[in-house]
Image (cartoon, rainbow, N blue to C red; front, top):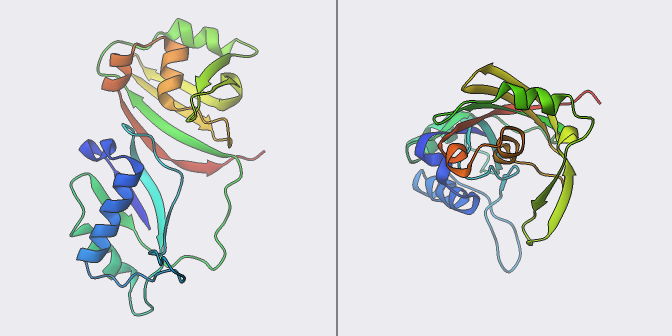
Amino acid sequence: MYYSKQGAAKYFGHLELVNIFLRALKRADIAVKYSEGFHPKPKVAFDNPLPVGIESLKERFIVTVADRMRPQAVMDGLNAHLPAGLMITHCQLAPKKMPVNHDPLVHYQVVLKEGLFDEARLGAFNNMPAAPIQLTNRKGKLKKIDLKAIVERCELVDARQLKLTLRFEPGKTVRPFDVLHHIFNLNEEQVKQATITKLGEVLSDL
């Protein structure tokens, strides 16, 4: 199942998003299968959480339904009960063995509402052999990451629009917000006002 997350929906946190889809499945009377055991749970699995504040044209989750349910009926049923900004764009039967993404590249489009991208700062970053930065992980601990190893592509379309490709590596997550701050020295308000849209993922050829 693929869906888009745009507009006000970009502010839904991951757990809130999961609950929204579970409620929509129930309201649409879609027969979701449950796990076995003492605490059965609906068989619904989401990909990596999207950071709050980022839009996306193509996110994915997998739901196991009764054999009688058809993809088109599931899509139509869900779309009738989702809030504005969330929309199922494609629904199909999942293969028996799901492909595993090794080291995917994630593409973004960034449009500034306040301020301009500094081309000189981007040029300086591109010429650096390495760009170590420190980020705080979920446990509050500092981790050092080489931004040059994560940023696969950073290209200006114009003074307010940027194409960005980040390499996803477990344990070395860098958000587009971090890139905007460290490369272009944008302040927190400029970053919050920016429209950041995830365009999708592709496997790297490495």
